Amino acid sequence: MVKKLFTILTITIVLFSSCKKELPDVGGTVAERMANEWWAQLKLNGTDVYGGYYAKIWTYNTAANANEIWVDDAKTASTGNYLWDFKVKATADFNNLTFTANNVASVVPGYGIKVKITDGKVLPGLGHSKTGNKTDSIYMKVEFEDDPGTIYTIEGHGRTMFIEDEY
Image 1 (cartoon, rainbow, N blue to C red):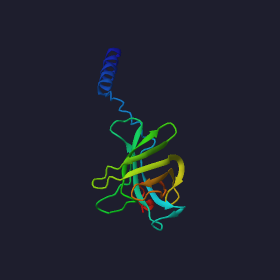
Image 2 (spheres, rainbow, N blue to C red; image 1 turned 60 degrees about the vertical axis):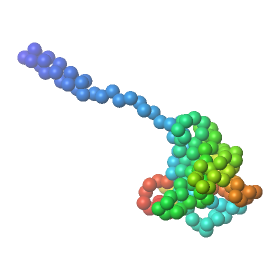
Image 3 (spheres, rainbow, N blue to C red; image 1 turned 180 degrees about the vertical axis):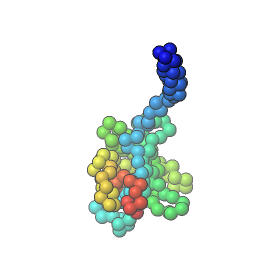
Image 4 (spheres, rainbow, N blue to C red; image 1 turned 120 degrees about the horizontal axis):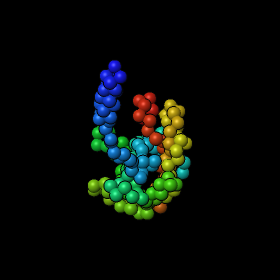
């Protein structure tokens, strides 16, 4: 009886240990705390330029996975929604969740204007969605080459993916 129990226990241990997969820790990118889809507004002197309109912008890591992020106004062909039509690499400080771009050429095909971003920051937990859900917030001052001297503010909150929070 003891021998039979020992055999069953040994087989069980072997079966369970052989089924365990050792998966690698793939980790994340250096930009993961700053990467998000955002609902944002373009403002001039505190007033929304488009009268209450929210558009998506994106922040995400670059292929270099270094001290930079993409800041992309996410213009989509299907909807045409966007704030200005720009996509630039910004220098990022991942410890302080800040980013800047000093007259960086946009990579939008056929619209390579230079963009200056100052005071860019991601503020964890300080945003509120359309229905009041707590989310992150984004803020930046932006100057576009095709409107020199005008400093706009882009500010918004993280996209929750809840249908009731969509614009």
